[in-house]
Length: 189
Image (cartoon, rainbow, N blue to C red; front, side, top):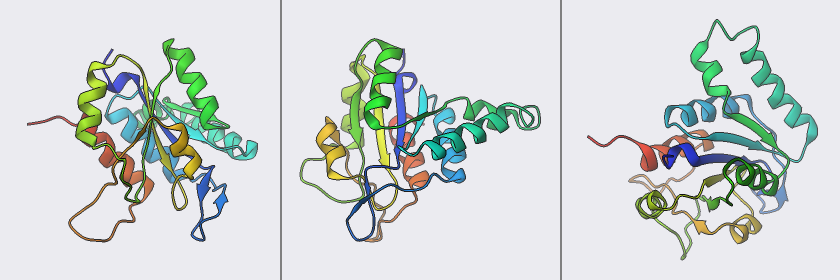
């Protein structure tokens, strides 16, 4: 099985920071559900988890997916196919448990951040290392002002930030996921 087929994106809405540095729970957005599902499908991922402890938010995601699987399925086949990858989970631990059950092995947990840190792994190094490893992998992205430190404590790998040629570094999570997936799975000419 290819690395992409055993890789999952987890978009965490808790525990994440707000702009004051407090741990909070953020709201799910319709754009994140659709756009990250489309990126996940484009690069052949095993799945995409929307992770929130809020039951009503998980129900909302399920309703969005059901809408595009039901009455809208024939009208927009590409969107339906992308949304087939979406799963909801109440926590990162529940996500890891589901991936472990799917593959019979615990996934490598790789967390992302826009903040620079000393112990980061490059995207190239991750691709080279994980290509030989047959374990599944979960790429963890945060909402709000980024993943709380406890997520990095749980992860085996902290990935380097995505930087452009300027000092501005405030990508939407949808853009960050798309860039990350292209760095890991994009076709080379």
